[in-house]
Amino acid sequence: MEKGLLEKTGQSLDHWIKVVKATGLDKHKAIIDYLKAEHGFTYGYANFVSLKARGTDAGSIDDATLLENQYKGKEHLKPIYEKLLSVIDTFGTDITKTPKKDSVSIIRKKQFVLIKPATKTRIDLGLKLKDKPTTDRLGGSGPFGAMCTHRVQLTDVEQVDAELTEWMREAYQKAQ
Image 1 (cartoon, rainbow, N blue to C red):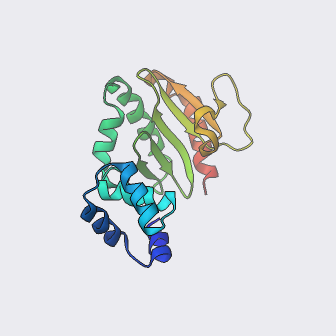
Image 2: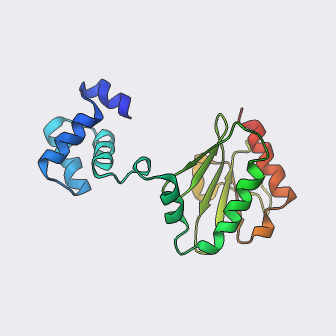
């Protein structure tokens, strides 16, 4: 987005943040409306600049805080998350963990796992396993849509078992 903003407007993100701050606007919608009306921004770029100017995008928040916020009120699910990571870490050294506001993407060359504390009682584990049939446990992607092909709902650390490990390993191997 940042590179596209520079190409589209001829000005850097830093420039646009200064422009926004000079307006005194602090509400997301007001900033978007201003950038669209006064500078001809599309919604996508206006949204991007507004989030960056207000420091409310996931990229402006450190990983530890993102994780803390994900598990606030769901602390009892954190051992499931930690167990998933300990298993995933055995697959190889070419894995990147990217916390977002509501989930953590696990990436090789492509995302192969998505870990999301979906409710106060459940983690949804998204997997990329193209052409793998669903089962009672290995469900369709559900709310993940195209980000994942399958979803496993986890409520207990004991559910991080050999079968789940094999599905995660398969997703890892396919993400080359």
